Length: 119
Length: 216
Image (cartoon, rainbow over all chains, first blue to last red; front, side, top):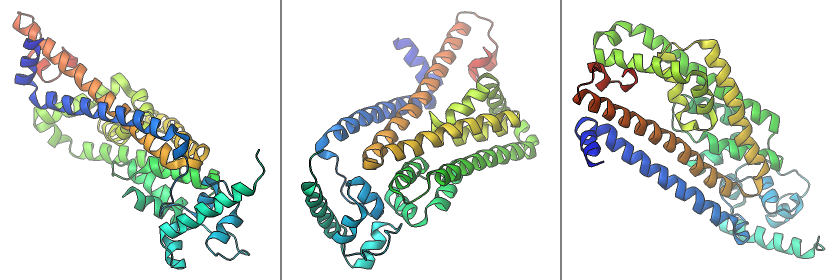
């Protein structure tokens, strides 16, 4: 065993180091895949916080509410369709921060689901 | 970087997906898998059409694969004399050809989706090795079909929580790619060490084995 390692260190030093690094990377990715899976399996973590890349329709889908709830929460025109734009863009137009939008959506979604009969 | 690209996905939609999958097949560091997940999620939310998303990702990827292949092939042909001038350079090309002889279609197919971070490099290796082009194109298309279906499909099905699916699939894909590279390197190291041991004990293995254990 020791003899082999010594041989590799003498003749294939770069490749041996590369192997150690890639092997370690495999472990890191593997552990992260498992821990992230366990983290997200917890039902308490299911509701995503709003992020700048999301679209209004995506938020409606993620929070399981109709488009009207989103329009009302952000004071959008109830007559027009939700359009495809990032929340960063929309936040700028509305003069709101993402946190404010988040709070309003969370409250509106909670109120909406509270008013729904249990399925 | 990732959030920036995803924000652009919301604002620019399908054309961006096409460009990013195209660039990713040329080994440019763009988060194409993540963008496919997000576009699948946006399709589920009703922002994009699922068929258009799938078609754009597929066309971008196949075009990128073939461009990578032909750039490497033409460059390899043009630098023929330069490649042959030094044994080390010639060995690089021979090794590419040997690799493609052994693994060929399956290397192209599985590096599209199962170990997708290796995909662009396999494109270049295939071109350099002058791997039969129709076979390359066929395996590339079959593999990209799986890749696009897998990621756009995952994004569509798990649209409710894209943050979760993106972090899990990203790490899983890294795990598989690093695992394959580690295994390949490990096998190569063991083989070359054994070849040296054989030579020391008076075997007749030729000298080239030190450079390339496949020939031993």
